Amino acid sequence: MQRINIQNITEKHYIMNTETLYQNIKSKGSFLCVGLDTDLSKIPPFLLKHEDPAFEFNKRIIDATHKYAVAYKPNLAFYESMGLKGWRSLEKTVEYIRLNYPGIFLIADAKRGDIGNTSKMYAKTFFEIMDFDAVTVAPYMGEDSVTPFLSYSGKYVILLALTSNKGAEDFQYAFDCKAQMCLFEKVIKKSKEWGSPENMMYVVGATQANMLLRVRNIIPNHFLLVPGIGAQGGSLNDVVVNGMNEKCGLLVNSSREILYASQHEDFDTASADKALEVKEAMKKYL
Image (cartoon, rainbow, N blue to C red; front, side, top):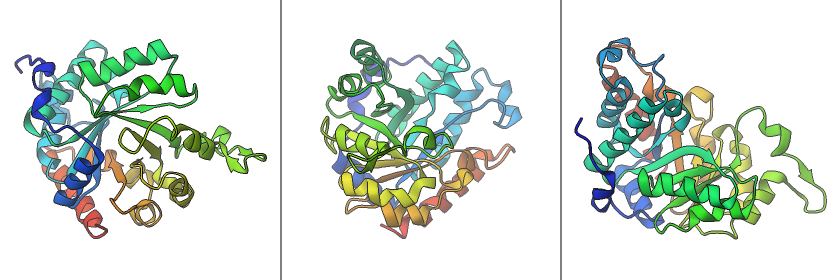
């Protein structure tokens, strides 16, 4: 693939805001985010013959599913684990989406968050160099670790609020008797002061759908990125019933169920079928 300077193509994709994202959701009848958690040990073996198997896999998945997805979310761990080759695969994936499907919302699932000057460099990486629309950020270090990401117009912080892993019970549900709320609720309540629905979203795991009403009571207008349907067992219906707002307000992520629907040469067709199935289920709620 010819080397492309991504900074020369940024004007060709839509400037994202909440209304643009909502219009894309309405036009596609979908709030599906496809997680590009590309694992070379799980992709169809014949792809390993390619010079860049991760990118070839991503390219075919994107071409097959872009009609049904409003967002893609590469998980950076899968690319960082491949060293420089992985970073180049990621870069090419971003370039490919920007050139061919400019209306797609693009999330860097990086879970960054550090002291201010370090977060400033992370923000530059993902918003200037890589041209993502959003990046996932860990809130533990507080406001000065998050605000550098919020200085970019038309970009979003997606703050980790309530996750679905077993370890979430270690800290996120810790109850503050004085405040009469759990730690995850305090995080959301405090952090919403730093930004707005136009530059902040929140991660809430689908397997925590029973908590979505409590989240919505604090942030009724923000978009929520909800991983965990499909292979992780989360219920789309529970997520929608408890988490949808007047403008949808949801990006529901599916990764393994779509990516690895088949190991055959027509794997992309199987992935498209699975994405369409999810999209059709979502359309009923819009």
